[in-house]
Image (cartoon, rainbow, N blue to C red; front, top):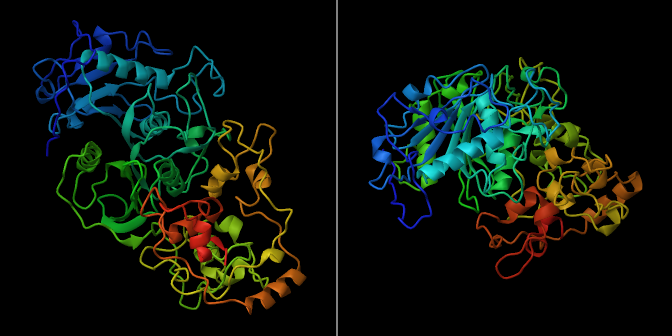
Length: 560
């Protein structure tokens, strides 16, 4: 299927000279670096630098301009751009291809060939990747290529694609990215020379559509995140887990809770899970494929019978707004983690569906399962720890043999439905504690903010507490200490308070319900269930009538 192209108005302020856009035959791209200064003017480039420009005849109009999408292709570490002219498929898909080469890969992490430390942002010797790509885009605009910008990269190229998307803006007008077999860095916030060197998207940045494909058994870039052999032991560099990385992009684009469905694949064990983050408030598309058992080549897997390039161009078409033929029904199942090689729990080991954390009744076993390392120590109002009540979520079943591989953050196979919290249409067995149950001294520090942005306050931390609670301010104070409410680290009450909680439970009333009709004013998908996933931040949201979630979503916000 071809893209619908729009004509560029002749009034656009473009100056065309000898470098005007020209088409080329298949497998015969022009060498942009031979006719322009895209390499010679870029920092840290050597004679290895080359930029190929692949322009189908269908993408050049009579006035020498183009509105075809422009797709950058980035190779992995140690690779080259040689194969893209044959396998990019831009001629079949009415897109302009751009094929740069890196300096023995891309400068997105620790690199032995670098002269400067990673945190020397003023370094003038090492490759400035953001500046390099921004310079190419400027050159293309001056030549009359005015289409939306996309980037596809695998491995080290995928790391660069994530960085380009994170730095999207006027200087880096990225519309969408396809990152293969790698995810966002969780640290450091910046690395390498220049100003377009941030490793996570800014809260002030434009929407960026994201398609990410990873193998769950990748030995180079672990699906679960953490360190990687490619960092050479440098502990300054850490990866988000694949799911947490997608959560960052989902938050950035204002998307709803993820849903999933099973897919078939040509890599790994032949199966996978597709995660869709729907109803993004800014119109972006955010999707992730987990290739079960897939390794570091999972980015080339076919999915549901579609070749890898077809999956990628299908994504770009949807970003462009071009209608496509649906390949599968819209998924409706709730999010489930990809299966791993771990035994299926026996029916005797289950989560207690009645258990709730004593500070918020939205904190059930499903909530605990999203961050078991920290939340399995939570207690209910009657002193029962999550590790006891949520045995399945916390991995504390006595019958469980040792797993054959490291399980992901949520150890529930997709074939087994995840724990289901109590329906919002009936009151849960444990109602919100009254004010006496809370330590009045436990409150977020209004003056705390991350050291890289004043906007990164406790409210911002609460939007993704699983990862942001490890951030620190300029004085080295972690968010987990400065934002105890946002991070769920308020101290436990003593036993006397627990006994009072039990007494208060007897006074619960069935009149405490969530309003099933309440919706946030910015997104119809933002109902009380959505609020309950992050009550510390979302309970202050309003609907179109000015009613706050804390008044309408009594159960989810613990405001009964």
